[in-house]
Length: 170
Image (cartoon, rainbow, N blue to C red):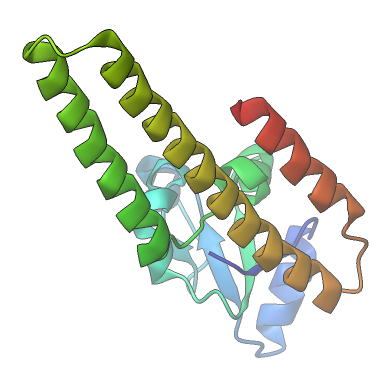
């Protein structure tokens, strides 16, 4: 889920922008009881724990102003770990093929097939997993680099993070 997130915005600034008639894309990530105790009328309520399932309810083309009680959850929402990504059919098909390969290996083991044949197939699955990881990281990196370039920001850190993720995956 690509989007523009307001890093630090004081409630007074949000209030002022609303009073000026600006249509804001406000996401309230507080829990239900907090939401029910009071909220910004035009805000979309999605508790932080449900963002992954409900991210498609947000417009990724608009700035997203994330609000919570203390700022901690809105900060978590903006972290890369919570960031959404759309996975295309290419990666899904890769994983389905791997699933079939693993089922085939299990059958080979049940049938008592040769160790060398089983290990060869396991190596093929590992190779396929490595390629899937590389594809996912590359697609994500490309998306993030484009977003950062539009903002006029340096992309070196993104590349470093991608390299570290690839190394960590091994």
